[in-house]
Image (cartoon, rainbow, N blue to C red; front, top):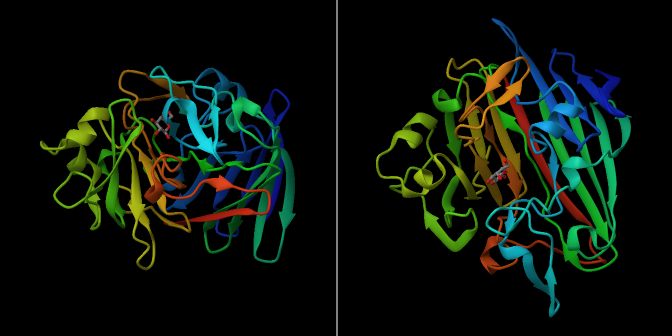
Length: 343
Ligand code: GAL
């Protein structure tokens, strides 16, 4: 296994981790993000995640792609919340007046400190960042790290840690988009998806949660046995997916046994299994509509990728049974997600 470092533009770096099976995981200190994930197949190499070729492209096109998201992933209704009796108003950055992904800019726009770590079993890059007290309105100096690792079992692992000096909110995630065809111009419709979740969060049209957890049975969001994404997108009776022209929803994981999520390429040659200690996974099927992006010399369109954002559910500060995102000075935040690659 090896790690190489190269220039990623504007003072940022790209770190390439390569394992003994030829899997390559490229990450950047710009937004502590995943940029490329390349796997070998019998028909050649495939880059199975969305990403751009320089840090500048993220700034001009979409800075969330592949990034570490924080302090709070997803929407905070009106940017308002109460902590220990005190009301906070944090920065809002959506048209509807909510806070998305911790306000902007946030983790995705920062150059993180980086450190390469080699052990017998894996290679890692650890990114660290201190978000100062009051940043985008959030209390507490928050010291965070996210470590990307690759091993010879073809597992990409993400470990998050954080500490704060004042009670605050913390709910990070990673905004990786997969497209297992390796071609950003092929929509993910033909992929097969399994999600071990009995319930999902119902959304309002502005993307905030209503507070209702709905049983997936009989809805377009029942992925408990593998089904093609096309079957979800094309189902006639699917008010929730029609609101967003795809999926943009939190799924509450049942954590039975084995993988929480499995995604398989249309040709069956590549699959990704996600296993997380988080309670929820937000799945977003890149519902970009007419908004196209230039990516690696091609055009990324509607449904060009699918995210698996492991976290506590958005709305956790409003609705008790959506998870816990309060971080106190005597606690250490810890979360882990494994993406297991099969090819
Ligand atoms: C997702 C969110 C979407 C969209 C996207 C960023 O996590 O659920 O609504 O904002 O991030 O493009």
